[in-house]
Length: 153
Image (cartoon, rainbow, N blue to C red; front, side, top):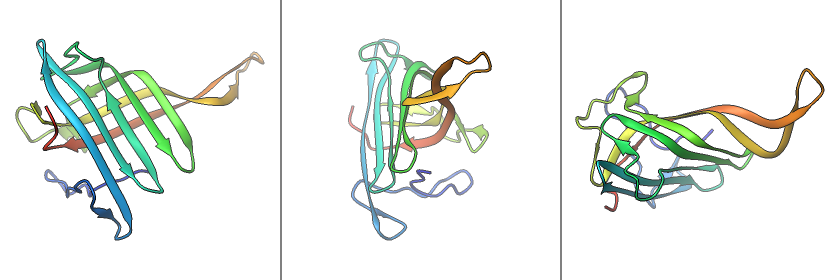
């Protein structure tokens, strides 16, 4: 499981690009939150070397993430042990630890704080057997709370 920073009530411990997590694993953070149309375009990536990566992207040029949340968001979870799960129909809401994000607004140029929900993330090349004998790509409900600050615009 990828966990960068520490969830501590309403103000999580942050980890900056280049810092280490758990004293040994280097963290890489790349992010852009830029105004587009009536919303924002987001490109977010956090990697803990040797553990995994979370990537969150909205459709470019569509302003798909607003102060109400976002739809049709792509979420990718890459794990050293569990493979890569991906879904392109994820949603962003402004929740953190099951409560409303304490920052208002939760999204602005250069920052976003929220929750991504990808209930049907698929892992390519791994199938599950259906009751009728058919097969389908294995899916998993992937969820993550996140906070990206000091991002490009």
